[in-house]
Image 1 (cartoon, one colour):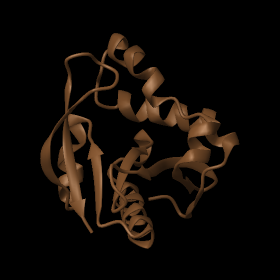
Image 2 (tube, helix red, strand yellow):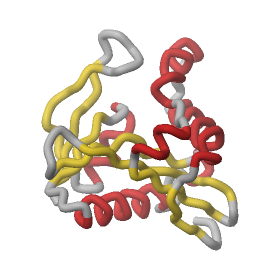
Image 3 (cartoon, one colour):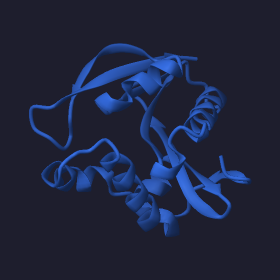
Length: 155
């Protein structure tokens, strides 16, 4: 991992950099151009999203290296993991685990008992290593007919 990693709240001016990060991170899995184009709307981070979610940025030596965001889930005791992206140069560095621990601490502090996530199938193993368990599937918001693993972490 980089020498200095700082976690901070995202600010509206981060929107463009966070969108680029999300797209690079998603493309890491080898998806083709058509797939990536279909995901652009869903992966676009807007200033309004930053304002409406509990979004945290990881900066490594002053550069945005990752992000995680939580939103209210389908009940008071559930948070939804909306975004969890690590820039490609930091995958495998432990930064993702640090962001996940931060999300768990944040959700607990908000009184949540669970965190749910619709995961990229390629990331399912990462979530399971973090203690999440498969609870079903959810339809992709970007790709018609594609189903995503739905996972839950009990806090």
